[in-house]
Amino acid sequence: MTSESANPQPAADVAIVGAGIVGICAAAYLTEAGYAVTLIDRTGVCEETSSGNASAFAFSDVLPLAHKGMMRNLPRWLADPLGPLAIPPAYLPKLLPWLWRFWRAGSPSHYEASLAAQAGMMKLAEPEWMGLLDRSGTKSMLREDGSLELYESESEFRASLPGWAARDRFRIPYRHIEGEELAALQPGLSKQFVKATFVPGWKTADDPKVLGKAIWAYAEAKGAAFIKGDVALVMPSRERITIQLKQGRTIMARHLVVAAGAWSHLLARQLGDKIPLETERGYNTTLPVDAFDVRRQLIFSGHGFVITPLATGLRIGGAVELGGLKLPPNFARSRAMLEKAKRFLPGLKTEGGREWMGFRPSLPDSLPVIGQSKTAANVYYAFGHGHLGKTQAAGTARLIRDLVSGEAPALDLSSFSPQRF
Ligand SMILES: Cc1cc2nc3c(=O)[nH]c(=O)nc-3n(C[C@H](O)[C@H](O)[C@H](O)COP(=O)(O)OP(=O)(O)OC[C@H]3O[C@@H](n4cnc5c(N)ncnc54)[C@H](O)[C@@H]3O)c2cc1C
Image (cartoon, rainbow, N blue to C red; front, side):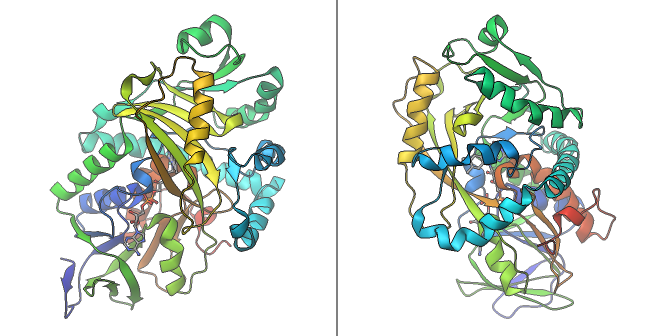
């Protein structure tokens, strides 16, 4: 058993810091494998970024962010203070090193390497999620109705084609559509959308928070334990790791998994691992379920947001604000996307919404960090999934289980190494 006391004793199994979707899935996989798991979080289970996202299982979303299309849009996006991408001026100096790495990640060779690694991760993530949904009895929360990516002009559609061609290389099915077929897949859409791409394999879940809590209930039923606490200090030695909470308690474990989302680098730094993690803050509004009859996830890439029909409401949002962990939220962003959504779906009822902001944990090359600390082989990192943390959580959990149990990882982890920077 993992022990927890004022005078700690050497303990056996695994402690996980961070009860977002990545930590929850890791807890489920490790508990299934017979480990005694303690999950630690300062807020609760699935209460941060994993609670309010767009709920997509975006297994076909393999393009790294630093691609040419993105770079082309940058000047236009940055010119609009409430547009898809914003950098608060006060945060810019702190961000420059990350931006430089992001820029480099867009070079052809880096881009190709990240694309292949991302596609490999997605190939693992999909069957791992389907298996976990089955085992945890949560499959009924899965919606397999595909997505529609929408274009306002021929030129916007044409600009998307290289990205679709890249997906061809990984045999990702999609279909470009227009006219009646588009109107049938999403009735009531504004006529300004002249074309769309339908991705049949795109999936969503009823609600990310409900799903996260249900996966946790499964892990808990198998024996995992939760401790509410803010981890202040991690002190590894060869046999055990001492985890000190701000509340004064100490927890001991043989292995530690750091799955603390956008805050993970703060713990990694204590172990001598310098990882360039930034946060892409994202915003949304969740309207009542009957706000509009949206049939499947709608993606407005040119405007940087999506509309997702959930069991708990209609969620509208996205956008990226590179503003760090401390600045207060600017919910004018949520409202700006809602205004656009009203134009795109005439008749959308915009009253009664809940606004939300979350912290995407993002590395400059759009790939997560999955691997061991350079100074402590019994500390494992599982963070930095950016826009895709829900999609990749079960795949990451599988890889962490492989590492903790000393098995060969299901995927070559060199592209995800904490030491790659
Ligand atoms: C607007 C928006 C839309 C998104 N849409 C999607 C989507 O459709 N599909 C998708 O796959 N992804 C999506 N994402 C991304 C996804 O939400 C994230 O990648 C994912 O939630 C990250 O999960 P996590 O478990 O790493 O982090 P989190 O969910 O943030 O969990 C980290 C946890 O660590 C805890 N923690 C941190 N430090 C400490 C400490 N010192 N002590 C104790 N606890 C600590 C925090 O309290 C938190 O609960 C979206 C994100 C946003 C913002």
